Length: 142
Image (tube, rainbow, N blue to C red; front, side):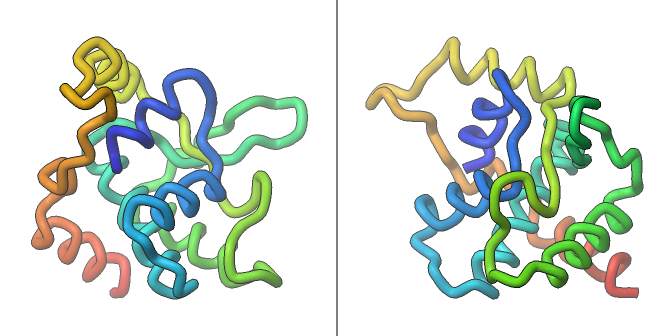
């Protein structure tokens, strides 16, 4: 799943709605709370790998990184998601992701070496360990 995310970001910024779509299709989730948690976990994993940065795209200004520590960026995502009138973000809402130079190199590597069946390999080992994610959550929760 992270590989699909970083490849998507190789030619354009990725909006929250795309992350939600990826989570729903790859994980088969429909429950809004489960989708939200999984989407935030995917963002967390991609940031921890150094593949993406989180920000927004103000009209006419292009991608603007929030340049926040991960716990603060996650808190902003939660706050913006809480403010939605619908369970899932719409076009351009909540956050955007941009590949970092490391993420761009990873996307190039993936595109140069597709899996044998022609799809990208979405191995779970691409995710940071549960322990790493738990440490981030504990710091974030306080």
